[in-house]
Image 1 (tube, rainbow, N blue to C red):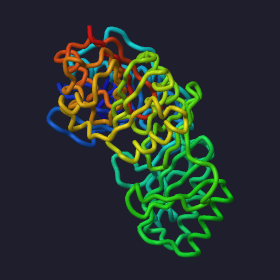
Image 2: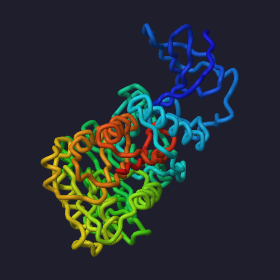
Image 3: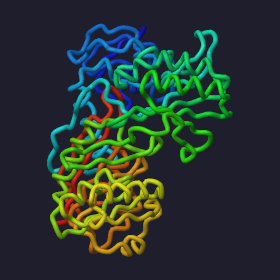
Image 4: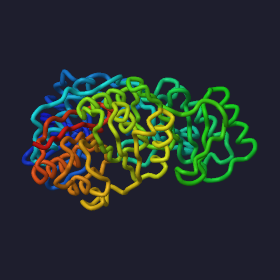
Length: 432
């Protein structure tokens, strides 16, 4: 069995070893460790390997809390002490910025992190009937597989949701359409917990009664989704608490639908909004753009500061929700929302929005390359960029610095997804 010394982690939290000119990616191995490994895929320049044994462990190695870790694909870093996870993500960010974008920030921001367990308020779980495993399975996919992990609990879901996994398996297994219900979506709000059932066939009257009884017993809300996300509707109870999250520091409550995009980690999102607003430093009288604004997670806090805000988003449904929240929070006069496909942004289309003093950009994983390329001579003097993909942030930062003339002031990570390899970050750029 080959033995190697792990020198670093890659962006998927795999240990990296070097052997005879090859790079070996070892699942579950940590920097500084000497390990035995077994390769399961060999290519001319690299190999993918399983960890067989740890001969010399890292001080950062801990016992995973979840019994499904290593099989379930929901987590990749439970074997790493939480502060070491954050440090590893910071290295991934800095490596991406330099190796992809050839840029370095002038300073590194302190990392943002929160509770390591029970943080995940949004999740999409697969559902499948597997008789050889006892019936219904509900969970994340196994690593590198289409199979569903046989999850009885989940340590990253809120405890009250984790406790419902087995009762939900029994419930769905009892439905007449058990084999035509492939997905369950979770949304935990300030006042309620929602489960969206993706149904490919109509429910029977008996099915509907079972759902009502379950919802009443466990004090949750069921939505049904017969087609795409927009088809989801509240099934039971029809009346009651609304789905929302709060930003108490800014005196805001934002309603959302369970299939809307919102941050999965409410506690870290509050810290993120505070950090972003501190870096943006909005002032009364300024005109500020919030690009890829969603339902107003940053737009409304910026408006609360006294600035005038234009939020731009590609989803009409999210824009509608943002407008409603602005009015409900008394900010309707300071916020303007617009629908636009920012992936097709041009200098002309951006100029039509008018001049902005500052800009916040919070794109999906694809980044904001067309937007940053479209910035003209009167571009905002400060840009705060919130990223969920270090590679596209690095690419866009390169354009901002080398083409648009911005200084790269600072950057840092936030551990929005503890125990996973997802790297979320925030960066600040200023014109001289």
